[in-house]
Image (cartoon, rainbow, N blue to C red):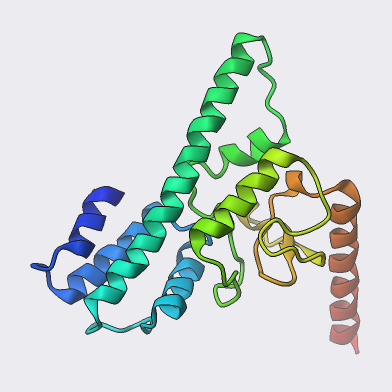
Length: 207
């Protein structure tokens, strides 16, 4: 199976058919897609001006999209190196019990879906790298009451039976925010909001 770098070289190769270059970009997103595969693809299509199903498009747009993905991947890999170094230091000091951020990070190693958007059509307008920088800053700063990506303060708790799709979703940018970066009060409010929405749906179904 081709790795991210090998696929990236195919996207940039002018000797390759444009359809293959597009396919290789999609395959890159199977290795690294911060918003999840479908939402990241939608983001790239909008930002770089090509359609979801375009087969004959300007190769320069594909390369520009790849540049954005690679820049974001570099941001995340740098964070993962710092994370791994910190954990090694902590283990040497006898601190072997992982904290909430560590538990969350274990499920996102590699960065795929690290800022998952549960609705593929709703995601931040920011470049991928900037979105990750803001998320990482929040991971390293402690808890708060706002979305680390867009600053929104309204969340709804989502649960659909899948661990990776469970948690507080920002009502503004659509990111599934890591629970450890939000305060207990903010998380409780998100759960209450979801419970009220469920009750309204149940009443509507009965009525």
